[in-house]
Length: 156
Image (cartoon, rainbow, N blue to C red; front, side, top):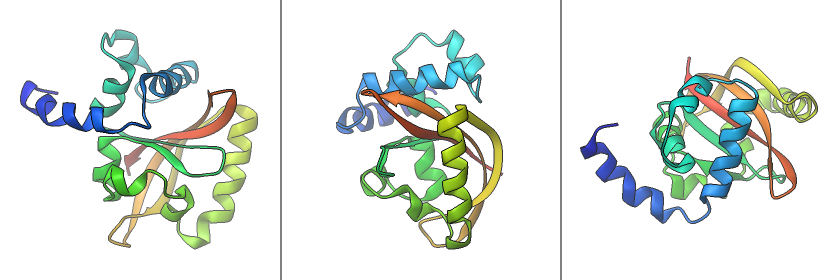
């Protein structure tokens, strides 16, 4: 990311109070542990975990144990169309077409048991209500002694 882009991102990073460095660090550890997309870039990165998650080109989303989005990076805004202020606190199921919701829940149950699922090709709902095709690496991670779900998402 160039200096001009970073000037635009910096205020955004500091206004998201829910996303502190501890949360970002937990996500980073899980990405590395499961050797998911971007794991190699992580090994060379020297900045903060939070900054890294906002600089990568892939969407990074996580939810709490109740299924509510509690992390949503800049790339997620481009993919799904929601600004972080709209997405944070929204049930993540709202991004899933009705006909795929049961399968999503089964996948999440499997991920919580096994740790990760890679290269899941599926559809989600953009803010415009159009279906979008995505590829996701879905993984579990620990935050405040609770196991929950996160995903790295790219347009298919």
